[in-house]
Image 1 (cartoon, rainbow, N blue to C red):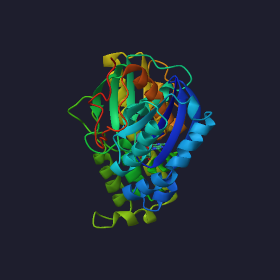
Image 2 (image 1 turned 180 degrees about the vertical axis):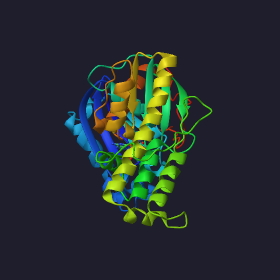
Image 3 (image 1 turned 90 degrees about the horizontal axis):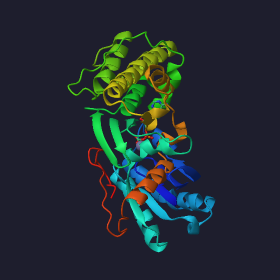
Amino acid sequence: MKILGIESSCDETAAAVVENGRHLISNVVNSQIDIHSAFGGVVPEVAARSHLEVILPVIDKAVQDAGGWNEIDAIACTTMPGLIGSLLIGSLTARTLALLKNKPFYPIHHVEAHVYANFLDGDAPRFPLLALIVSGGHSQIVLFRDHGDYELIGQTADDAVGEAFDKVAKILGLPYPGGPSIAKAAEHGDPLKYSFPKAKMAGKYDFSFSGLKTAVLRAVQSECGKDHTYPSNALSALLTPAQCNDFAASFQHVAVETLVDKVIAAFDEFAPKSVVIAGGVAANQELRRQLAARLPIKITFPDPQFCTDNAAMVATLGYYVATGSEPTDPRDVELFPSISMTKTAWKLN
Ligand code: KG4
Ligand code: ZN
């Protein structure tokens, strides 16, 4: 069964075709990073307009690369969560195509789909499966008992970890998106130069990253001999490149260690057969290094291109949804811009 996946929930317009939830046949991603970097973050209206401009050529290329519409058995499209204007462009296009081409339509939960980047090619993870989902909008630990049967066991109380990378990068004057910029600067910095606190949470597997971001800001102010009255966007000009690298490395070290501490504790309690990481921050090499070093089982990592937003993960999850549930009438699709993973988006029959 070949599924066409369509993704437009944030700032990537993407389409891909995946066979049987395993084999990637075609994959097209149009990133808007260049458009939004001028604003230092995603501007929702600009994102929606850009999706509108490229969505048809993006889908067309993915379908043609897979051999044409006759090859496509069903359409799976992200309908939750995400920016409402962005979700609307992808889902209206997907619904229209489902009607025109007479293909079954399956709504997809974006965060759940991130986990499915791990099912593409290679060895499939085994259940029970512990997933650390870390992106610009989400920081969660989810225990999957099976496809479509999962439980949220921990999440962030405030900022997502990717958001913390992005905000700290701004303080340090590093370019957007902050995650890769921090990782690059950190390669030349001392991770133990500055010690930042780890938040103590009531929930054993919950996170908090806003305090860490503020701790970095205070440390930068103190290093520059300034107080909170000094504009934070002017601080980075006072830092030497070496100081900037040390701040990036020290922040990344603590942010990653916080995530890994929780994953190891959850591993000890739930004894999963596999552990996977997903979402944009899963591309981070320091996260991969610390996890591989501390987990008692072997962990394999998704290709970084499938950690950030893409449609291959949507088409992969689409296969399991299509084989385990009824299609949705394309004329009757609801969007959920802020639904979390506490509610299973689909149920196996
Ligand atoms: O999954 P994603 O593409 O979009 C969301 O659904 O949020 O994740 C984007 C986030 C951004 O915050 C970005 O800074 C972060 O992932 N990111 C990274 C790396 N690459 C992307 N964070 C740390 N290290 C990286 N190498
Ligand atoms: Zn995402």
